[in-house]
Image (cartoon, rainbow over all chains, first blue to last red; front, side, top):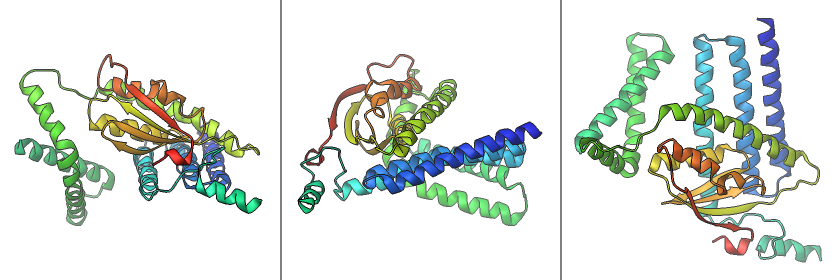
Length: 115
Length: 195
């Protein structure tokens, strides 16, 4: 029993690390599309790891089965939510940020201001 | 053809109801009535989606079965393998993206990738789209007929899509030996070429 709690702690800590990385990415990345990467992805794995850690403390009981179902649920719904947000942004003609991009009106405007 | 639609709707309702009963664990009138109500709402919300996106394929499948041809069917053994394979891919890609985000120089190089695929049906496209989004570093923006539009964070992220390994695994869920799945592809790296 004790050893299971140690493993659960490791999984929850790993999940917390990925959630932290996702949040830092959300603050640091340049535009909507790239921020969706940090928010929607690191979070998916982080949540899955945390819930799997909780599952280890429960074992194969009714509660444990419910936690496994939640993992499957997150795995199926999270990408759909991210996809819908990006599709909306794309249809509103939001131009993504690119590295070394001279043609992007957003980038050119910034360069003019810097001069 | 209406009969197939009706049967599939009934199957869907029964499955939802079974999940409800398993999860609730309380079998009195109020709780079961709430289960019936919510299952009905879900089926009604889903009805139009199935009518316009999946019904044609359901009909096609039933016709193939009637003629004793091999219908395109999901192979469940392969699905189990695929889920674990995908989880491993997610872990690798997550570490890549986390490293890039935490790196002070932030070596990201976003790109849009448009590529054509040869997949047997709508479900396969949904699975591929969701898998791409689930793998960190790549997000499906749009699926129009057979053409996927994907946003990727780094050059390392979209390698697995364009060399056909991820789409290939999805195709293998339905066919034993799929042909070349990924068709012509373009990589967009400037704002002027996006729309």
